[in-house]
Length: 456
Image (cartoon, rainbow, N blue to C red):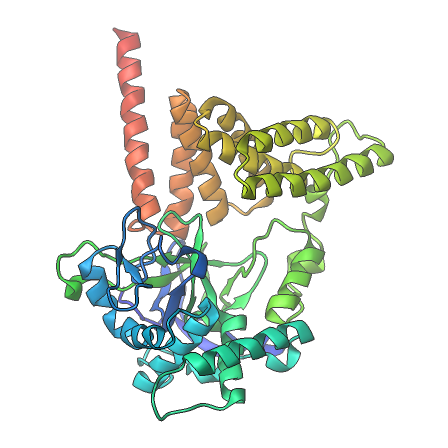
């Protein structure tokens, strides 16, 4: 498989959904359908000092660009590898004295790339960047106002020289970014760290139960020479067997929302009404809002649901303020109130369990964290399809907590489950999968030693 290989897909008219991609041959589970380097990408404003601007890994100690004092890199090799992408940005930041917001920086990188390579950078790119949908006419007034402010900021920042662009053309580029930008995550897959534009990926339509997944591969940045670095890229992978001619789909948003809420988010962000089977038939909505088996009264269910919603707002506020003691206290109170009223698949219960396990793990209270994480995974398993990256990551998290709390066998089993899922969604060479493989081997060795001691 080579980066940019697109032989397995073809562009087609997907009817009401517009353009789409379909399989041009039979695909197998876990296969990389195509891989694509970013046309342009930027690190989020809030993380510009914590994330490498070349490979998008989070690192404890990064080296700053001496010229602009804005871009940070793992090392000199990463910086050299990224220089062609950064040099015009570097000059522009020095010129105005500060870096603009991430959308302006990404728009500028897109236009610098267009000037350098035009809208199609390789034979494997199916469509030029400028031909992507922008949906500017569909934007609500609030978004149009923000777009206008971004364009004005861009025009002050732009330093290409004599080549200037009209307000409408720059608006078109911003619209493309707003509708097609891909959120890039760090090497652990847990935190969103940047935004990128991938023209082929932009052609893949949404489905709430997709047959493919997409993950960022951060490339090989360990080589001494930048010439040996492999590019950061997205890898588009089949979640199961896909026959020739079937449309390829990916989920733009997390499935764990009611169908009405998913439809609303998709309309607001991507400007289409989702008509997939899960939304049309409201599949699993009943589980996401289910009452406990004891069938509490409608009045009690309404009371606890309202309490949970209010409590989740308080939890999020305390979490943002890093008041973790109060977070744990609120989670315990909320879960106690939900007991025998809300089912284990209820969205509000799952959200509380997720926060509680994460914060307790951060506090190194692994035994308590593992209990909450296990309950969360049990709920996720009933809602997510089997080969789902978020389900895999949840199993990994719970497995590590069990292992760290001394429950090696249970931890090993969950780590193995996570490994099986992420081998499909992330592949064998991703950082997370390699870490899981190492943990799987370590827990297996520990179990063998315990059995040996017991047999002796």
